[in-house]
Length: 279
Image 1: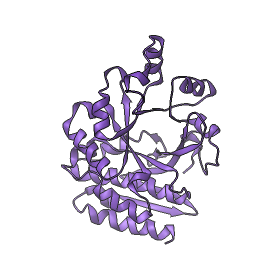
Image 2: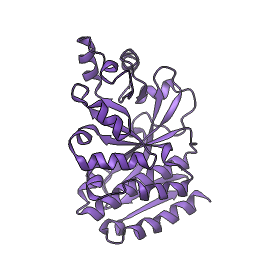
Image 3: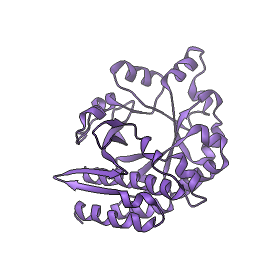
Image 4: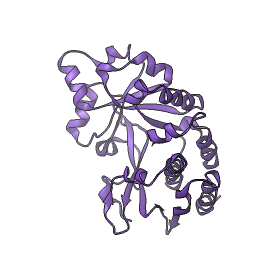
């Protein structure tokens, strides 16, 4: 099926799935002259990808999906601004699915195959808005793209995973549907590794400076995780020095500008920064 037909399908199907969401009337995808964009509630969205690679070899692991957001007058806005427009649970659920479907469309548009995992954010307001069966509807949406849930990595906040039973249940649900899980903003000194493992978390993404503090004390992160049952994923690796530090600290996966330079295969349409993407 041509991508234009898939875009048309989801412009109809997503509002049908969320009939009580007010934002459904102010959101749409657009494919024009080969450029995939979207608009919602007066914001204009352009997707871009940051490669994630194996730190040791540079082999491509997947693509982290991100957004460039502009207002109606062309000003850049943080992606979190979109959630200000979501007034109730129905709008939050619609918005989060709208964005994740947008990234999946872009993944398909750029021709990435199943060997390149798609890395997506899950907003905590989305998790809070759903009582159960987290990941079920999105599994159906992914199937339309020919993607499986095990080809998707979902990013969940590590602090919420430790503190909130509902977020823990959501993680178990996601893992049960086959999604791979990454715990972000991890505090390695106060991490319950057994809990994360039972929740289905495969990787943690702490701040590099936190790792360096542990390393200076001789307290290796790998010892804390129980012989490395959970992998280390480092973000913001944007220069050769950061790459060297990440490797020295035992990172399994890295993402950032530097990851595009160590990847072994071409990364179509990858911008070095959001500023390189034009609407």
